Length: 141
Image (cartoon, rainbow, N blue to C red):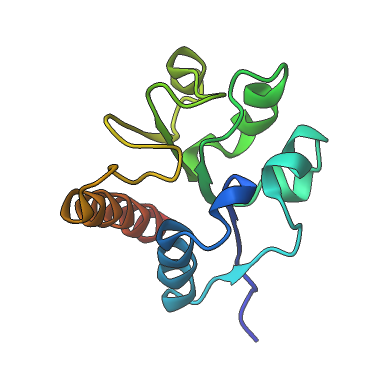
């Protein structure tokens, strides 16, 4: 029997039907990974749940500016893709840089849902870019 490989995807609550969330789940599932059952991974990570913090995953707009958050994420940094947008609440590029080994994707000109207002094609390109980075992460694991 093969080892169960668990991943986490964390998005803000208003992104629960986001194409980015769907893409992340699909890429991991195609590679044989099983999504963790911890609900909101960011909340669990902030509470210091080591089983969640150690899981590889994708964190969309994590609260990097919250005290202690980056420190709790550091043990899994090499297994994370952290995505945020300049101007997005909670996004702190200097804090993201502290996650040595994590892949950090900072997007410009996108809204908190990682979409480009009024431009469907640009939004699709953002989704493709994030999905490519998720694929690269899964390939490394």
